[in-house]
Amino acid sequence: MRTTQGRRNFLARASALGGASLLGLARPAAAEPPPETKKIRLIHLPAICLAPQYLAEELLRLEGFSEVEYVKVVNRKGVDVLAAREADLSMWDIPSALPTLDVDERVVYIAGVHAGCLELIASDRIATIRDLKGKSVAVDGFGSTGHVFVSSLVAYVGMDPRRDIKWVVGATFSETMQSFVEGKADAVLGFAPQPQELRLKKIGHTVVNTAQDRPWSQYFCCGVAANRDYANRYPAATKRALRALLKAADLCADQPERAAHMLVARGYEPRYEVALEVLKELPYRRWRDANPEDTLRFHALRLHEVGMIKTNPEKLIARGTDWRFLNELRKELKA
Image 1: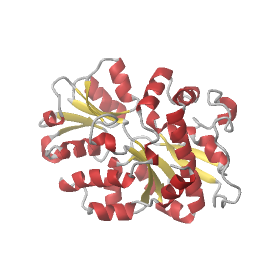
Image 2: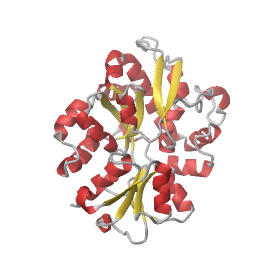
Image 3: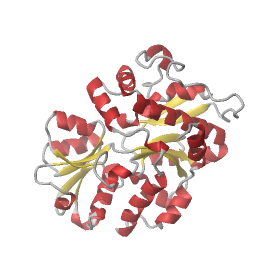
C-alpha cells in the first residue's frame, strides 16, 4: 500500500520551509551523471525521527527523480521491505537490521544519519537496565526494533535476553504501547514521538535515552539502507537520493522550526511542539563526523555474544555495508 501523504508539492504547499533557493538547496552540478532511473520508492511509517526522509521529497525531484513514492509499512521491518524489492532506499534503525543482514545479502547500509530517537521507558519498578532481569518488556514481534535493541541493551550489561527477559509480544506497535500503558509489561522501547507522548501523559519514566546516555549516544540509531540490486544497478541514482536525504538531515538540524512546520503541514505530526522537541533533541548532523561502521560493530558484538546473529561482526560489516556514496558526499558537502 502506498500513502498519498507527502506527495503534495513541497515548494508550493510547505510555506513554512520556503523555496529551495532560500534554503541554499541548489541543484547538483550539471556535469554529474543523471539518475539511471527516474523512480524511487522510500518507506513511510509513523516515526517522525525519519523527518529527513519526508523532507527530502522535493530535493529528490531536484536530483532528477520524477516519480517519488512512499511505501507504507505496517508491522514489518523496513529492511525486510527493501530486501523484498518493495522499496529501493530508506532510513531505518541499524540495530534491528542486523538479524536481516545476518541471513540476507539483499540489503546494504550506505550511511548513518542521526542518533537518539530510541528510549527505554519503564514503570517505577525499573531504575536500571539490570532491573529488567525477570521482568516483562513489550515488543511488537521477535526481531522487531524493540526486541533487538532491548536485547542489545541487556547483553551490554551481561544479561541474556533469551533467558532473563519475559517478552510480551503484541500484534502491532500500538498494541505493544498499550500493553505498557495498561501495566501488562514493565517496560517498552519507544521511538519518536512515543516517548514524548508518554511524558505528556506522565506515564512511566526513561531508563535509557539514546540521545543522552553513553555509550548509546555515541552511535547511530538510524541510517540509510538500500536494496543492493538497486544500488549496484543505479549508482548515480543512489548517490543522488542519499544526497537529498543528507541535505534534509542538515535542514532538520539547522532549521528545526521550519522542519517542524513542514511535518505538521503534511500531516506527519499534528502537534507542532512535539515535532519541534524531536527535531531539536536529535543530532541530525551526526552523519558528517561519526563512523556508522562503529554502530554496526557495537550492536553486532552484543547480538553475536548472545547468539542472536551467527555471522562474525567484521564479516557482517564487510558484506552488509557500502560507504562509497557517503565518503564522496562528505567531501562534496564539506563535512
